[in-house]
Image (cartoon, rainbow, N blue to C red; front, side, top):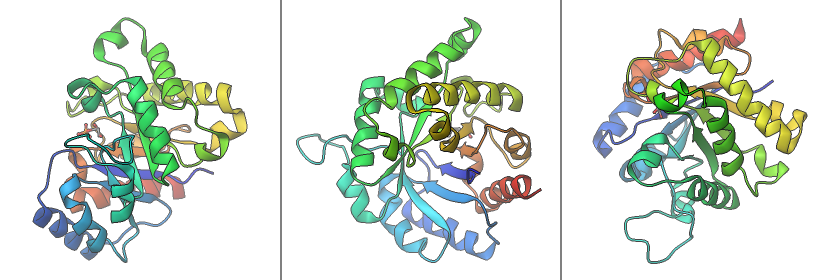
Length: 255
Ligand SMILES: O=C[C@H](O)COP(=O)(O)O
């Protein structure tokens, strides 16, 4: 059975002080068992969070990484730098990075390979735009993005990869996909992984849904057979809501 994974993506939110306060509030709440938990914070808050999260079940994640170890890449952060801080996960290819920062299937793949090489677990984002969805291209888009992201990844490395299916039209809009639709697309992604790595390996890969997930709807997504957790933006920003998401994910899996 795949362990569900709830990852908060704070995007460009929270100063260091705010990030540390979040963890203090989190510690006052109770953490649910049986769910892997991650918080992907801005680069500036990572070092302080590495310290603050000690003794909690939450793993630290970043939101981007460069594919080179070092060099003349002004403004970029390398996998070695993230590892040194204690980062374990890194979001790669989020649609906001594809849309606003020229991230391509090719750079996503380079970043995935670099992350795995340095012991970071990539959370690889795939998902279609509204235009692509309305043109009936959802399956082709997510298959292409998945295959491209995983080019050159070997079977052993696949165990460290998490995929996040995020339909772009559902991000931050309050319009989530229906759980059934999300499950159907995630099954297509799993099928693409199976074609490349075999059915057994594909069944072990965790695939999250992301896009307007909240404490009120997490149950419906977690009840789907192919959905293994969520990548959550807005609703991960308060400790109360984050804890509710984790508890929701745990409740469904325990029932
Ligand atoms: O990475 C998270 C996703 O972009 C979803 O964001 P959201 O939960 O605010 O819709």
